[in-house]
Amino acid sequence: MTEQTHRYDVVVVGGGVAGLSAAVSAAENGARVALLERSPEAETGGNTRYTEAFLRMKSLDEVADGFEDALVDDFMGHPDPSIVNDAALPPRRQGALYRATHTVDPDYVAVLAENAPPTLRWMSGHGVRFDFMPTPFLTRSTTRMAPVGGGLAIVETMGKAARGLGVEFHFATTARRLTFSGSGVTGVCAHTPAGPAVFEGAVVLASGGYQGNFELMARYHGDKALTCRPVAKGGNYNKGEGLEMALALGAATAGNFALFHAEPIDPRSGEPEAAIFCFPYGILVNKDGRRFVDEARGTVDAWYERTTRAIQAQADGIAWVILDQRGLAVPNLMAGVRTDVPPVTAPTIGELARQLGLPVAAVGKTVVAYNAACPASDGFDHSAPDGLATIGLDVPKSNWSRPIEQGPFAAYPIMAANVFSFGGLKTTSAAEVVDRDGRPMTGLYAAGELTGLYYSNYTGSTSVLRGATFGRIAGANAAAHAAARAAAGV
View 1: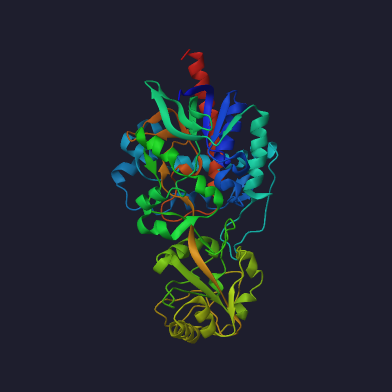
View 2 (view 1 turned 135 degrees about the vertical axis):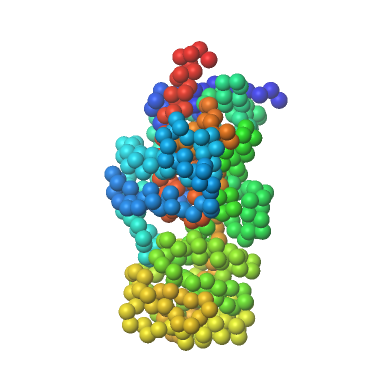
């Protein structure tokens, strides 16, 4: 079958927040834009379509306190100081090894912090409304805003803006390979409903991570790939082609390929983000009926990911949170329970364990030991870490420790869901993809969850924000690149 050729100025791969922001930005800067989306139109938007899209903001005009420090201070291992010391140098003096090194770029973070507020204002100008929306976090360490209507509102509103600017959408179309010449990346080869096609233009990759590709998950995460799934249906469209295409041309990487953003969900539910955040007010037990992690090391928004990883490390990657009536009576507890499946309940701990298929004696012994280690409940404060810690347990609980003794009792199963993969492409603060020699790859830009930023722990409520911010930057720069090529007669 003969390949069709479609000529554009800018080709955006992916229709989530990063891709839509790039498409709108490029079109506003005079480019003729194509947006390629592998899903059908009714499911377009990837992860963005299903997320509540919380944003780490103090207001529309200011990022949250400690924003840059939280990202730059993420543990990145022990990089060679003789290389990363170049971060303090002006860009023109930074060595190639530093420009391609697998660490957080402080300039990238600074540009994100500076450009996030005007990006949200820009989206507001296109009709996206932002406000302080209710969160599922019963205790919080930072401030958050969100689009009214969640990520779906972003997909619908920015999609309408893109169409109004003349962006041409190509659904059920999967980018497979980048095209290039001596002057750089010139487009993508794609599979379309009509057969193979080439889409010419500067390329913005915004196709998300690889959580929907079990082979890549197994390659990077080993046996943990079997005990997680995408947090929402949209993640299943993220097969990793954007990563594979760029790596095939020698792109550099950033972010930790050994980890992904893990969220605790109810494995019984098919709802998007069926999260279970109530575990700090109960105990977590594994298939052996034993506690294995401190359920309450601090505010749940700052600690849930690390707790979820501890759950995934258990047999079959699953655990159960057990609550009594006092735990269930914590004010607003159900705001942190997003599953549509009711808990398993029983009048006694033994009967609850039996219904869960757990060893009855072991669960009973665990609960007795935990109850005996709880301090007096005076000073219990559900709204903030209260220091009510267990005494004498090998696996302590640091806050909110009260005996589990008032039946009937309830339990929810919890597994790790993959919100997005940490490992991705390295980009400059101008959203240019960098090659392994530290040079920007001419004509190739990337934004969103395809780009690497996180290493040991997700800095909450920054993913959608950076997707929008660097999508906007990528679109503008791709349009400028296309205009310069046209002016030069290339």
